[in-house]
Length: 351
Image (cartoon, rainbow, N blue to C red; front, side):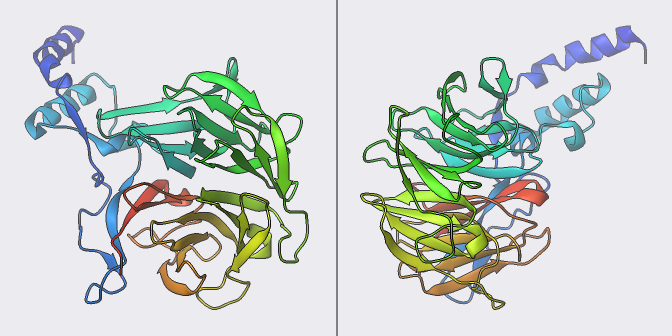
C-alpha cells in the first residue's frame, strides 16, 4: 500500500485512536464466567473467580466500534500485531494495591513494575529503580506509610523507594541485605520488613530506612528460617513463607517471638513443599501459594486447613509455578501465576 493511502486512512481513523479506554478484568484471553467458585458452587462459596490481569490487553476502547477502527488503524500502520506485541506480563512475582486502588505488579521477566489503574483507565510500566539503574529482578513490593512504594530487587540486593508516580527517590539495604525478596510494611508505625532469602532472616527497617533488628536465624527448628521468600504484615503479626522448611511461621511484630506455625512438609493436599506467597483476608484466613504442586492452600485463622485451589494447568483455578500472593481492603486475593504470565484474582465472600 502506498504511503499516501496509509496516511489518508490514518487521518480518517485518527478520532478512533483517541477513544476513551476502560480497564476490564476479563481480557480476551480469559474466561468471562463469573460463576466459578470454591468450594463447589452448590455449597456456600468462600472464593469466587474475579478475573485476571495480563497487561495492556486489560485495557480496551470503551466503544467497541471505535475499538475495531483503532485496531485496524494500528494493523495498517504496523504499530502492532495484536496481543503478541502488546505489553504483557512475562514472569509476575508479587504485587500490592495502593490507596488509589492501583494494582502494582513486579515482573522479573520484564525487569519492571506493571501499574494497573482502573479509576483512571491507565496502564504504565516502570523500569527505573534508581537514577541510571534499572530493575533486574524485582520481587516484593509494598506501599510505605507515606504513600511511597518500596521494591525489593533480588539481583540488585537492595530495596528501592519510588514515588507514587514511579520516580526513583531512594534506596536502602546495600550493606545489610544479600538477596531481598518479599517486603511488607507495618501500617501502624511504618516499619518495613524485608525477607533476606540467602541470609535466612527477616530484616526490619524504620520508616526512615534505618536498620532496626532481625527476626529469625538459620535453621529448621521452630522460629528458625530456611530461605524465607514472601512475607505479609497484618495487624501485630508477621506471616513468613519459610520456603525450604515447608511451612509458614507467624511472629509477633512487637518483639519477634514465634506465635504459630501453619502447615508442614508432606505429600497430602494441605501439606507444603515449596511455599511462596502468603496473605490474609479480613476474617484472618491465611492464603499460601504452594508453588511446587501449583496450588493455593487456604487455612483458617487457627491454622486449620480449609480448602485447596489449583493443580498444574492454564485453566481458571489452575497454576503454573505461582509465586506471590496479596490482598486488598475489598478482600480480593491476588495470585501471581508466574509461568502462566498472569495475575489471577479471587473474591473472598465468606463462608
